[in-house]
Amino acid sequence: MDSGVIWGTWGLWGLLGLVSLATYVWRFAGATIAARIDPGGAWFQWFSCLAYGMLAGLISRIILLPVGILAETPLIDRLVALAAGFLIFAAFKRNMLPGMVTAISVFGVLATLRDFEVL
Amino acid sequence: MPVWFVSLAMMGFGSLARDSGVSFGVAVVSTVTVWGLPGQIAFVELFAVGAPVLAIVVASSMANMRFLPMSISMLPLFRADRAAWRWRYLFAAMMSVNTWAVTLRFAPEMPEQHRAPYFIGLSITCMTAGVLGTGLGYYLAGTFPFYITVSLIFLNIMYFTFLFASVRQRNCLLALFFGAALGPLFHLISPDWGLPFCGVTAGTAAFFIDRRMGGGHG
Image 1 (cartoon, each protein chain N blue to C red):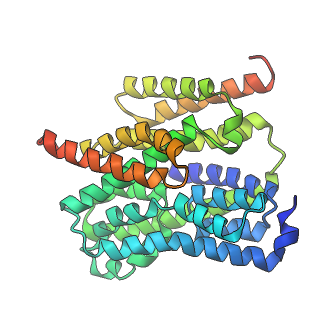
Image 2 (cartoon, each protein chain N blue to C red):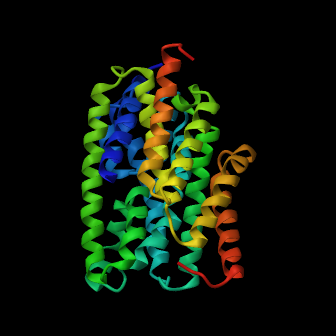
């Protein structure tokens, strides 16, 4: 179905405006609260923990329970690539680049092999 | 380095947007005004299936809720610089997970008056790369084989995974660990509210356990 037909050009721009506003609400609420937060204090630390907890939850959910195109790849491929990445990451004393390159290469090779039906 | 990942990730979004029937202008402008991939993806995917307006707005807003704790934990770094502090709402609008993570990692060691110019330069560079990536991805949509597109998306996820894994502070590492364990579980319980609850639970647990452990900060 082509949603553009139902929405029309202006409707889509209006929808983008609403979606953007709905995102700015969080950003600006954060900016307002930030005025009362001391960067050396406990609240600052707590909000940092909250942000990291939320981001880690999001990423781990995308790896384990993806939606969209990533869901078409087998879970084992994603996990093997991740494990290989962390192994190299640890071997290189927690240097992000070797770990990341390993994980992406392993995943890329697996995805290519599956696409050509070698695996 | 962050710049390349932004443009590659946004290329993935650009091609997704085209497949979803969103116009070129809306796709590119959304990269600047929404400036958060999970919210943008929710927007175009729900639009493609003809979801009601309210559902699209709520879903993309929830997907971008992380900006609340993120701006609270980044903006105080600029407060000592009085000229920069007046622009804090603009900084909040320019912030992405990428620029937030990089700023939190490097800005605390910088002199206060250098932090805002650093953040602005980083953000403008990343946004430009994001816009170019969205446009390029829109034009190239459908020309990539499956394994290239899916690897581009996985690259984006791995970039953040290892960027966060190299964080040094113990309380943040604990929060990452708990968040990674709880995220999928909470998502199974409630796809809409799972993420904020995961953030609060993992973050609060990490905060108090770190305090309990005492000493050895940094």
